Image (cartoon, rainbow, N blue to C red):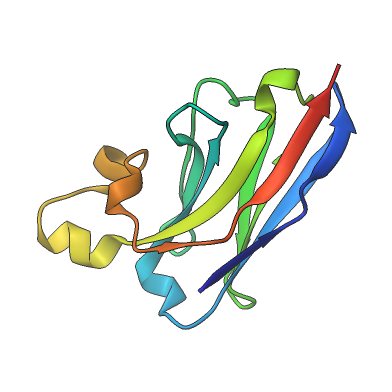
Length: 132
């Protein structure tokens, strides 16, 4: 299971920190990503981390403004969002993918990181609203 939290209402230029708590699966085998979605649009990958391997990815739209991190002992992943823009508004979901199993199929995290259908677990989503 994944539990996302930390969303809220913030003015443009402000900051928020999202948290994702994982339970019920072997955290060390998984990569965790943050996706966001607005009504009428597809779910968009924002950032992804493999906590045990140290791989980190950002979408071009958030690079330089968002920072993803993890606490392996607590099985948590965080997304620090700075310099927020109105276009960052949406429901943010954390998701987990078993990258060890995917690797046995020849699928690398780099290849699947922004593909929602590849993810095994999803959190319930947390709303982020950035006002102008």
